[in-house]
Image 1 (cartoon, rainbow, N blue to C red):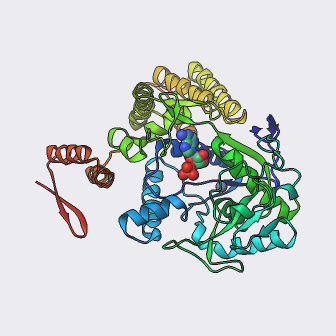
Image 2: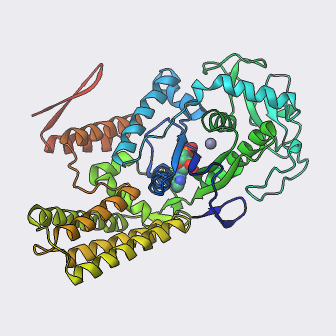
Image 3: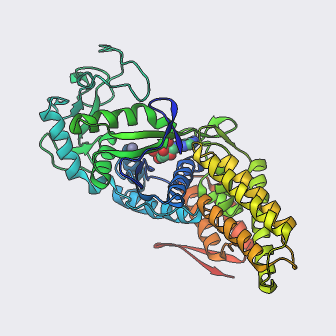
Length: 469
Ligand code: AMP
Ligand code: ZN
């Protein structure tokens, strides 16, 4: 198997640290809102990577964090007048629902930053002791970038030396920073913010230290694969390397994988630009497996532009796959056990060749686009060569192969009915969001849409209740 490594910028042969084992860490979402389909791209892709390794017989330990303390969470909590943990708990639960809808397997571990503070303090302490970090008078702890000569090796950026004073002073204590490239490991609390005790001040950790600590705790000092969206290459992953390697003295991750952006109108989809669609919104119009197929229809290192046409194309693709599965199941109800005909013998050879094509594509840096075309070719072969006269073993072989390959892609082999309840819940959730964002027009529109479905809403103190009219 070959993997494109962001560090070397080459496709490298995959050799695990330990035979037949894969340890991988993928940076997860910051939970202050419903996830958008840009966040879904790494989730879907890396879940597929994990599934493919499992298909290849590897034992995979997959860790993906929830960043549950951060400025945006604190801001959202202030706006609602609740504790930050109320916001993060809520959106972790919502994120898990979306993941289930997209057939994303739960990670082996889903650590949360707020539950790992002790480990973070310990690692920061080590960094101070070995000269890689320093404390300034207000209690902020900084990582000293100049202490790690390899800084920049992942992003291929050269560290600009001594640009003191060139940058805006954004963080408290920033005036005492030795070098503008230095980054925060621990920062003092502000009024009304969550905080923890530490040897330096009451405060909270910087974002980067979280992943170094969780990765080490759940996977050990060295891991096979570290993944995330390409916006994380710098500074986040560069900083993770600096922290982890300065403590362990060993290479942190063997392969660095980054997905390109999901765009809309050829611009990166992001919360800050407001040009996003939530997974929840998409789930109201499509089975989320359509979203999954859409994501896998492009190579993960190519930008992917979201459009209705592309989604409708993926919907038609899913339909084609599921119709073929229906056809195979139907045939198998009455298929006879008999020897394969010569045509079926060669059909089996073709099936093996197409499965080989699928594997070759996936072995080549997870080329899901080509892998998917091999699946469509098998679908076509099943439609044209399996019929009521087929030998049972032949129809069975087609069905089994398709099921196995679809499972690698995370696609269920049968139709999934969206229950009315989950659709209603999704719409209610979206209406709450709209109201929170003062988008009353959208909120009213949803109320009307629900009314048209025969659903009545009652807004009460404990939230929204609904009943069938
Ligand atoms: P965040 O919640 O912003 O920290 O993002 C969580 C994950 O989603 C990270 O791996 C990001 O790189 C990724 N991500 C965010 N926006 C996009 C996008 N538009 N396309 C692809 N990946 C994204
Ligand atoms: Zn991370």
